[in-house]
Length: 188
Image 1 (cartoon, rainbow, N blue to C red):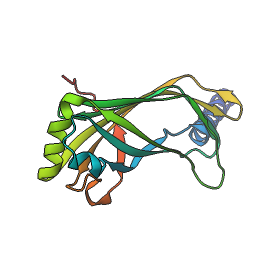
Image 2 (tube, rainbow, N blue to C red):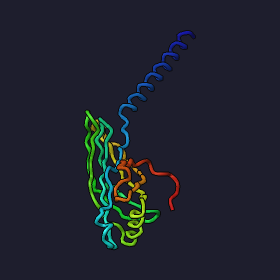
Image 3 (spheres, rainbow, N blue to C red):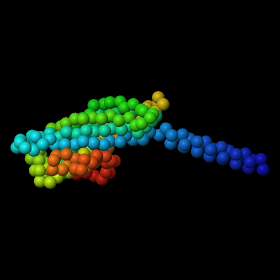
Image 4 (cartoon, rainbow, N blue to C red):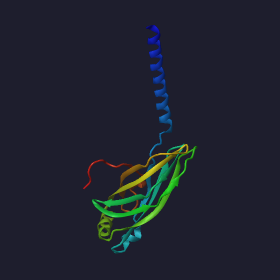
């Protein structure tokens, strides 16, 4: 009877140690989600001065891979800007591959511009010229991680943020905008 108890206790300890080892290994290789930051955003002043019914916004987006052992393959990335509930413009970023860097995080920087929907341009221009305006940005994409040569399943990414624009047409207080997890509430 005593040998059976010792054997059972030994097996339980072995299973516990293997589980703990497996959990630690999973934590070590589990990839983290990329970080998205809008570091520059502007509505060029030339658009303010003329009374045109058409405008343009310029932005610079940083996509940071925080994983030192995982590369990331991005599917098409959809970037949409909203003023209130109205869509100001959208941009599709083509697929790309972001490698790993063992010393520091790998950063992919994208500078681009998009045309503002004509019917919203006058309202947005008035709001910026009066004081400030606030835009909302939504980003959605799908990614695949490559860790030690092993391909993960496809992960959906949805991020959003608020961009405050000052009277000069630039980011208010030159503050970078970090895109966070999208709200799970229903959007109308």
